[in-house]
Image (cartoon, rainbow, N blue to C red; front, side):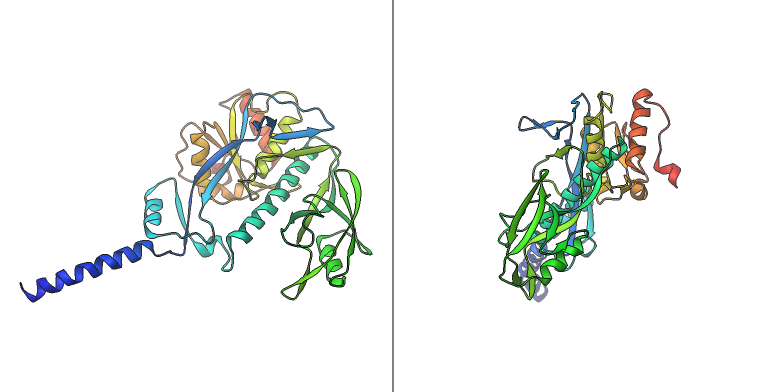
Length: 349
């Protein structure tokens, strides 16, 4: 046997080991793929997803579907074979990890942020829908998240309206931070909150964590409403991207008749308290999921329009929705005449 052949035979196992190591080595990328869609007008565990108390609710035909994506978690191992599969699939996408997550982000911090965004998004959606219907909503500071194993756990609740802490009247989220910072460690601090329309007085004792005084809550902007509206889609979906679809579902539930004319409408986009829509990640994957679910219209925030160029959406029409009001008008126009001109991303460019 020649030296060259002998060297090749010896090198082959080493090459195989190298290929295996490369294949299993985690790489700094994140993949996006289409996730399930959820009809916000449907029932969940025998209960309507949109719940209303203190106002008549109308549960009619039609579907308003929020769209989701599967995203690799911050600490998930993304290997070469997974990336190659995503690159080859036209419905998936690959992004550098640094473009999606902060360097020190973990699965836990990502889940917490996602939960906070979901609460804030739903509150903004309720505010938008009620404002569209002519109701007055008032801004407040509320609890968006309560962390386990912190002093506030079991005492404060998500959506408690923070009215007073110690001697401080709460008007901004920063007032909450300042009031806790000014309190002595280990001494009970008085809280007055509005919970489900009733005033509740309680005490939370600040503790020191990594040199900072904390009680373990995330305060943020919220609203008081003339009656109660809630959206329950379970714990598996987080983030702010369903805000527009939440607002449309709430509007539909509070008005007689089917907003969609009994048809399936999907979409994605954040919503602010003024009803403006904002961009979201994974729009192409969400469009693919909506098309698979049988949606005939898909609502697109204007800043996502460049990401839809050249997409083949079959019979599903993409509609640019600058605001929740624009989305309602476009759907109503389409229900009256399915061939009517609607706002498009092409018009924006």
